[in-house]
Image (cartoon, helix red, strand yellow):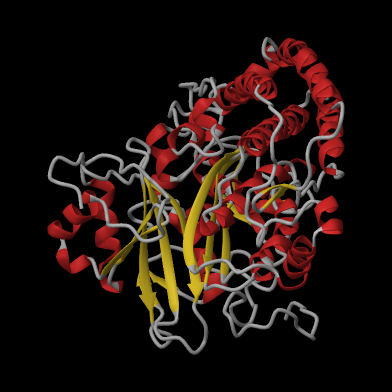
Length: 178
Length: 404
């Protein structure tokens, strides 16, 4: 770990080893809100913070305005299905970027299969709207508080969620509008 | 709705229509650049609400990645943003290379920069031609496609494919540049500034074009960031952000180029930004071409990168590696990465998660067109129907990438 003289700005990214110590900025965030951080993973020059399901909207709102991070730009939200036998089964990854500080974090929420609800972050960044619709469409993750949670890529009456691991790659029945 | 039912504050007095009309624009409308459908709520000719309806081109590419080996996935990326396939290749292979922690030789990096910037020019030329065509200026289209043809010929010479090059491989390139490529490329680059001047002559001073674009499709810098706009659309709102500068990759930090921005936040500003980017990309191409030095084009990783053809025929271990890579693929260490690049339309990010083994557990593309289009309702509100066409053109969307 660096001493206190480490700058709170962009951590210089080096990809020498796959496991690294988290940057001082992450430690500062952890001190600020210890109950928002379940786990910190620093690997391959990227920072991943696992956030409890209930706190994600609050954590995003805080990180957007906190003077140390200023994550004003939401790059991406994407879901991951770890597999039907895994528990927790689903991940939702939030890729945050700062247009002024040019650093990136990944926030991660883990969801059990029997409770796929997570709070929407559309009130923090409006761009989350379509990303959340896509994640809902393809994984069935439900974003509470989303203004318009409809399917986006697949037809409205599609059965199932296509990117789940137990959804078959090939079907045998042609799709027809009901 | 009859006129009596309208609440007093919404009463429309001096407009010819006292009702709103919902019409469907697309999915076969020529100016929606593919199969995009817009549901427009109109008050006379003014747009009250525009709702994009996408998914007509959805082919489940992200699902397909999970069933293909890493090297087979490169071919799928060509089909996403089909105007910028080399950019898609680059984002995908660099995400995999980050997981594998490969060092890419300098010559391969330089060729990647050169090809990507040529492709960016090609992509911007299609945008310029079709954008002008949508607004009513037909001539520009032919000038743009004449220049783009030369770029496609160069890409074809290097990779064998015009629209689907799949030129970048995990660990390097498919093959080195062919003999005479540098000369042909130099010829193209020598002539290109004259072509840009022609485009300016055709459009920039044109009063009709200015009237159609200035003040149309306004989006402020704060809104643009909030909506996640990236690339030329964001820079057209005065935000100087370019991933090539913010998070450099491929050695872009060593190239001298500007990040053009325009403060006007409208279709006109986005037009000017892209026009200036043509010159900047040209500048980078010239620098990359002058830096080409002989050297290896593949990383030193025999278990990942296919061996040279000659080595494969004479060395047994090279033959074994070749066989194993083709038949079984290569194992990628477990981990997850998000790799963003500056594609011609904005931030193209690839999220790749590996659980080990020869196939990715999950690949997700953050397509810039997808995000840029989601801001359309905000820009379209209060505009005329005819201006919707100009706004879509200025966003430069490619539906192949949106629907994936």
